[in-house]
Image 1 (cartoon, helix red, strand yellow):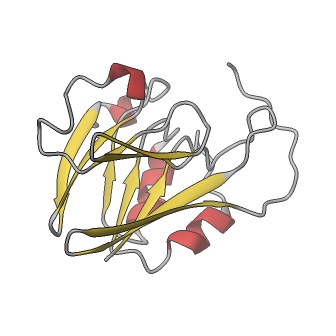
Image 2 (cartoon, rainbow, N blue to C red):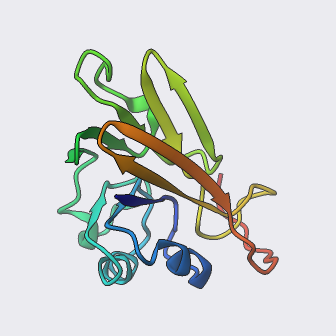
Amino acid sequence: MRIGLISDTHGLLRPEASAFLRGCAHIVHAGDIGNQKVLEELAAIAPITAVRGNNDRESWAAGLSETELLQLGEVSIYVIHDLTALDIEPQAAGVDIVISGHSHRPLMRERNGVLYINPGSAGPRRFKLPIAVGELSIAGRSLSPRILELDVPTDNTRRRR
């Protein structure tokens, strides 16, 4: 099962990100979505689980939770926008993977048997950080994560810090 990972689109779903996500069985968006249109475009690709980011404060985001716990196959995934707000002990809660966003920095690390993934930002470029997405291949309890830096045209979009 191939799970697409995306975060920090800030209202911009790049065609390169959409193309990467095609063929996924499920998509996880780790917040700072930006608008309802992004969710609709992602839902046209695959079922989606999304959490509200710190910038998702308009009425369209009212139905989004700040965290989601989902089971995909034999794997338990906890989704939160800002990892510093993590309010559970993932290992004790039986969580296999924590997916987050917020920092715009791609990250993949394992700690205490839990895989932490931040796919980075797929939206407007922030500083000189890469534009990136991720995927998670799940086969039973076996996980194969990957973060991919997208080859996108250079833009000069500046975002608030």
